[in-house]
Image (cartoon, rainbow, N blue to C red):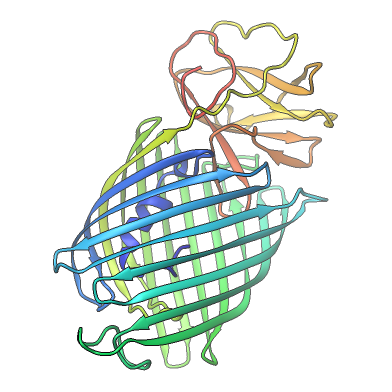
Length: 396
């Protein structure tokens, strides 16, 4: 749950959740280990080390659950640890429109005796046309902080001070846009985003505006974002950047840094971070993509990608290997659509378009969320032989 559960481990959160496109793989667990500098809840910046395990569990083509945890140890001997769960749901598109819901909750505790509990939900309506996705909705959040200080004082007070609980709520509209700058398909190697949120906390309305860009090219993914907060008597700017380089289908080097604003819900002060680390992903033996019954094996040098869509009248395959030019898929008797494409060794992204309306990824394919309810799938080609299907970024 970005930006709410524990600000003091923002470095790990950025490395784990915001750097590598492959990080949001379906039915995959992962562990990130990062070292660098970070700001604790007192506002003190020091060297730190973080370990963050996580897992993404798909519950169908339109629903997924993410579980995460993080523990950070600072050079000052301070520490913080916690966990979170998020749920992402999205309906099928009708005339380019869809409903989405992102909700979650988390809790953490620090060496200062402070505890944070947060819950939030963001329902929205999305509309996509050509390269643009617009969304609008609302965000409601609740946070409860137990801290050894008076409710109005900064975090935290002396170790012997009594614990006091502070509860805050936030509610307001959220809207923005996503633009695929390159490519004509739903997934794109260069994506620009804008998000604006109006949140009322303790009767004070603050407006947070942020703009970002993500560039993906093969094994490298780079992201950057800049934000601007405007509130009565408070105006500040902040920015983050991250990069991920895939060493193998199951390991990557991740780097992240930046500055974040105060958390108005939990009361954690602003801070900065710089971290570098490794992320290791572990598959769980998910089955291959669906087999088209009666279809001949793919020719040597070709990779077969398939999806089950028995109700479809037409299915096309889009991928970054040909600048997202559509390839017509073939229909098999068991309701599986498939396409054989000539791919050299490397990593590629793809998606299927069903009946020229809905974008889908295969149920058991590794995929990454785009932040607006959509997904693009991944396939790794490790040799030039004939390959059937794809799963968990492993050689087929």
